[in-house]
Length: 577
View 1 (cartoon, helix red, strand yellow):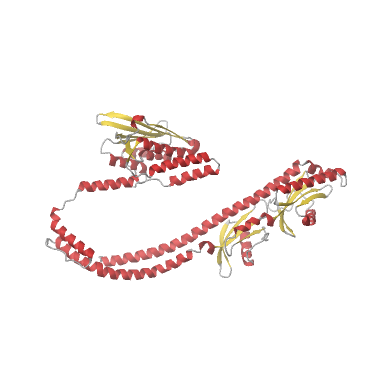
View 2 (cartoon, rainbow, N blue to C red):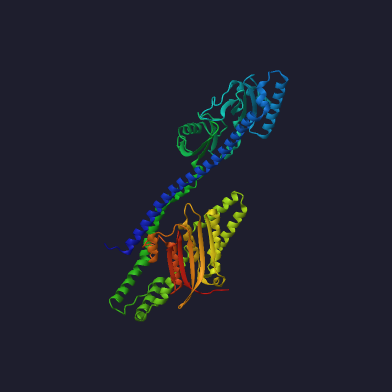
């Protein structure tokens, strides 16, 4: 089947238009899914951090109760005195003073009490006098108390209703005679939780396991019904739920406390985080219509300005092919075709004397190949190094972070240089040291190295990034699970009849080469036709072939008792001092 250029161009336009429309639709769906997942994950982590802070407060308060019950002498002996005795009154006063001091240090607690199961009396200290009677009656209602009574699922704090909203009640026994406990107002505890509100329709709420609303909330009754049903049915940290008659999608993020029957819920409309995608959808819908109009306009322009002059040019070329050396093209009204026709006519007149410089063409190809090979640098190293520096800073080890960043700056200052293709051994070694220092900080005690370069050879020239590639190969393939990795780099000179050579040896004590890999490398089969197996070593070898016409040798072998070694021999060439 033969197709004209006109048909091919139309088909190409249609395929491109369809691909753009399909790709835009796919990108829009993927973007929506990614944004939803990222926003949900980020807010889930934020909510988890907040819940952990609440749990930390509850756990620390409970530890204080245990400490008071176990170590405070007055609380421990409180039940030994009869009511009305002077020692009883004195002990009660000291306990009250101690509770007041404890509550001054912990703003979350609004009441502390010690209840004697022997005398059935208590010492109660409240932050506000108006809640004293209510707290007193609540405590009486929970006595006698034994560990675990009335607590759901191992929770250490129970949710109790009060006139000021819901509160958390925590109690511990002191040798079965005295109960020490505390009240924490839920509203005060989660006050900062409501700062998570983000835009219209979003809101937060604290709920119990049975779906009771325990805090103030801006969520509507319909929203609360969906939240209650969803939280009770699933344990997912976040999910998308429809709400309302129009099934508006919302992101529901929930997290449960480890120490109390509290579930923290954050609800926000998906429209708030994906509003900009609406404009993208409209744009994608307009693309097919705009594309159809563009195709029609392009076809008319191509027919008038491109195809008709092209057919005339084809007639002239056909005449040359048929042996009509006098065939020439007539001038076109289009400037570009007029210039092309004149050039064609000159070429036809001089075609027998035209010669192409194969040598110069090959040289240009080699130079392009050289630049392409030199540009192959692993991009994820930068991000990994920054992560290590960030970890050092997070741990307060700023000195190590500064050292890491200094080596990283030296490394990339060298990498991005474009002044020449050849560098001195001294410069290349500085790069290798910076790289190995960075890696040693990453792997700590699992990596060490040694570098030996005699001073007379420091100014010898080698292709840039040659040694770094070999060192990277050691790190990628050499690590063993049970042993630290040691890398040795040694440079020496060889005298031969054909001249002086540099011998560069890179060795490690790692896994070594496999038998199959050694066989491939010995025959310079770096990938077996796919370009995937030994691309780093192939890169070095190809650059060396482009740099040195003769005198290049590259050997690979395994060391005893373990490890790999690469030996590289190149002619000596000195550079700048």
